Image (cartoon, rainbow, N blue to C red):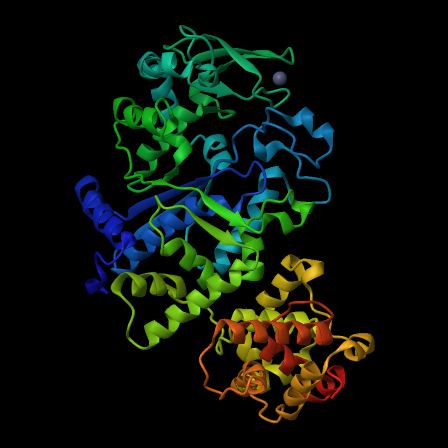
Length: 542
Ligand SMILES: [Zn+2]
């Protein structure tokens, strides 16, 4: 794999990370990191936080080097607000660590954080993302950061000075623990009510005795050197972890890169306070979603990665992330656009198989279908997604009918050959094809419409019925385009003129109306195949 270097953005970052890691910590496993907050559903857009370091870490592993991808669960962060749809009584938990908040009603998970982590954990397994998870609750409450906390508190004047360079621009500082002069980078969780509505009222550098009071009325004095019920404020916590974990690569979203933001401030604090270095950290752009209007509102209308994996295979989703540089935004389709994405993916697959793909395309394809650990499951017989969706739509998922159609269409012998893609397409139809676009093949002929037809239209339908013998996709395609040509007295290979196109469109509309009672539908050859020759003849009255 050494010859794959510098073929795409992933390779270039891997080169940079490897040389930086050799400079910083020679001989040690290279560390890439992601941070995720399980404060609510972890949106599909947030997956870039994981996929970007995953792809780089995976490339490093492919080159035979040891690389760890850390996923930090920011589950010791405070519960900030009760999301819509959750019992308002959860407001009592605002200010507690996410791991101390009960899971939403009906959940089988132990707490709020676990509930929202779980679907992502499942999705990452399916995506082939290999990582080492770190719970910040476990880290803080076990005292893992004790030295770092004491260091930060000792350096609070330095931190305050760094932050104050930006405060005038930002106009706040509230998150950092209070007014200037009283700055304290550590926030205790109240020992009585578990919330962080606390104020540090006194601190003794000699003894590390820390006094705090809480809005609930509780107050106590603890020794910070022994205290494990609190955390560093975010802008200090992040650089502390870069130094503690030796992170060499950690991307972040555009919102972290404004002046005074955690990334900018952290870059200064990591060296000045913790003696570490800021990771290589590309800013990644927004990942959008199309087809949201049709999403079920039961999840608040915002899809999570497992929603995407319900309708697309893992390699396709990996490919969407691998083929775009982090700074490029892109969209993940839940609407009809998914069919075009799949066409593009299949076309790339054919180019790769034919040895005609460009190096960057080839690299993105390889990253999509495999990891350093091996290949991801693929559909053995990749029938076009749009075809599978049409078949699933027409048959409403009926297995026997599906197999009959796919056998005629593409020589499919068992449904296992077209799985898991078939299942994904079926879910797409069930979940994202609007009811008014679903196909319902008519049970009986539309006699009123048939009676209203003129001579030419009847003739066209008869030509169609007579031509149904060539029961292949190619044969039926030639037939539906050929009937209007024949009627215009043109040869079968006549080029399309505007007049001919108009005649073809009119003929197709007539067929759709007779077969499915609408003006449009799945591609006609596929539809004819799904309906079956006998039923087609009956519905077109010939
Ligand atoms: Zn309290």
